[in-house]
Image (cartoon, rainbow, N blue to C red; front, top):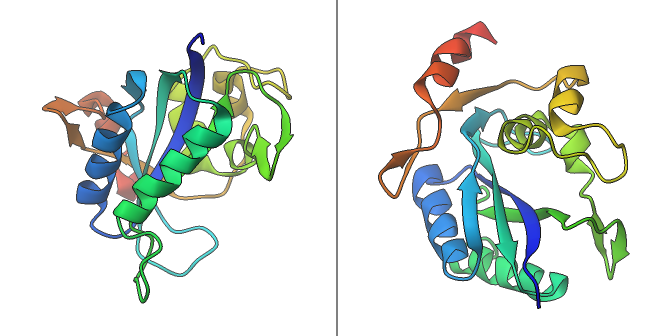
Length: 180
């Protein structure tokens, strides 16, 4: 089977650095050519909670869509997502894009609607894959971000994974949290 490009959205609002790092390490065990967007801190959307850290990951996989989604749920569970009495959201991993698939695949809708609705998905995606076209809209993710009028507060933050800074200093300096 050939490798399929995938984009995943990761987020956490509980022990954010630890949970995102654990999620990235788990993904690295079965995905190929992982690339990470800068990491953004944002106010919670849709729930009352502390701030989230979010990023988008691009990779390639030989897994069928439902097996990929199943493995993501296992990673979430391993990091406390479904624990009884949990507080907040330790780790959330969503399939945003899977190749050029469009439609409802047994309840998994692609491309994921949050791509166009949430700044904490669209901004990192536009930085990671600026020239990639949205499979339905047709505009590139850079064009979509530039045209977006999403009213959400988020800002780039420092985040290290495997000794590398995911969020370049110039981006962090250009968008300090108090400027947004």
